[in-house]
Amino acid sequence: MKAASHELKGLMSYYSCNIKGLAFPLMAVIDYKGFRVLALSILPIKENSLCYGSSNAGRNVHRDNPDINRKMDEAASILFLKKHYVTRDIQLSAPGDLEVHIGSDGLYYLLDFARVFCPEGP
Amino acid sequence: MERSAESLGVPAPPVHPAKEGQFPFGRVLKSKASEVVYHTDYENKPDERTDGYVNVAASLGSDPAGMFQLSHRRLALNSVNLFVVLVGEPRLADSSLPGDSGSRSSGSATTTRSLSIKSGDSRYDEAAAQRGAGVNSPAASALGLGEEAQFRAQIASLTPNQLRTILEALCRASEANTRAISDYAEVCGKLKVKFDKKDWNGDFQKLLGQPDSETKFRKLYHLAHDFVYAAGTYAKIIISELLLPATEKTIQPAELGGVAGGTKFIVQNILFKFVLDFELKPGLWMYGGDQRSDENGMEIGSAVSLLITFLQQ
Image 1 (cartoon, each protein chain N blue to C red):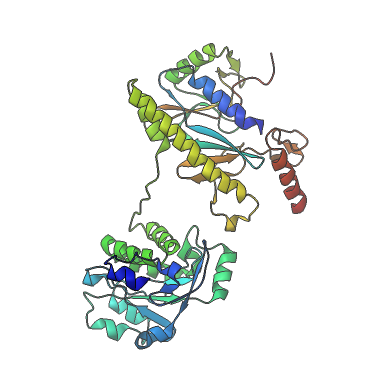
Image 2: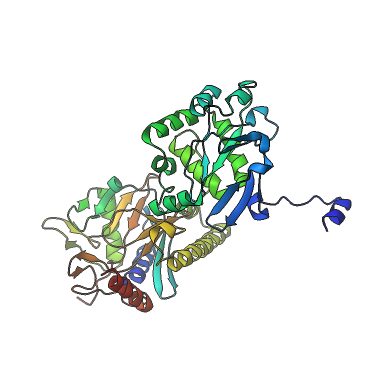
């Protein structure tokens, strides 16, 4: 599935932004016998540690932590991604389903990179 | 060959009892990677025969208290049809096993416990396999509620050291057996059996936090290499077992949240996601819209999954 390689691509581009404080999982895409599997390291996060983006397809969109908001804006400006409305009143500078969690070790973990870049030219 | 090795003074390597075809209290009827079936051999232990149950005095090192008693209560094990129970006190053994080893164990009640394991018949094994017992709460499904509570109390009366000794003894018997028992002991909250799993993310973040140096980047390279190797190995297993029913999978699918991603597996602190399209509601697919779409890299896979969908209908 293309989604898996998009996920890796998104992760790599966010990682190369070199924003201090943003942390990323280890990720590998494995192709075997025509199937594609995505492997991620387990992160020290919980469902309620979400503070940026949405984990339920846009029903609740978070933008809670000003520090994270600033860092995500910074990363988006490096990636030439424009801030956009995800719901009626919440603007995110990342895809709506990208999640940022505060891990139990205090780092900000990013997840779900499959929709970081737009599918076609704007 | 053996004699010559002994005459040379070379100690014989320890052989796994299941592999050797022998077992302290019986013989192995059949042995596969995933299941070991033991047959109780009464003739080997004629003096310890007690209506269908055989006591096995497991010699547990130098500890004389390490002789444990397992009575006829059964602990449905992970695909091993051994019925095992740990009896905490001799009086419990008396009440639960009338006419059994109570008299024998009463002489040295405070210091000695023995281990008795009953092997079940193959019919039970099949029934247990059909129910898929032994994964989440092995004993809960096999024992009645009252029995289960009593069993819990009995395990609770053992000290962690005693439990550990039992585990070690059973470890020699069968690896699968030990895993199931340690699972159960963990359920009882008595003994935390920790398996040393690699903390990929912890190591990764720790390395990234270090100041730049040659060692840091070498270690990072090794970590990434190990991760890809481990992920590849387990992914191959997961993909090879994709079409097996869930009860027969070596790696069990994990229940995790999230809309996208399909089936997920967790092995060795690595999360595996299948990136297959799925139906949000009848007629609406997450990626494909009105039809299934498993594009690129999944050509063969999507053909197979189409076949599965066809077979399921």
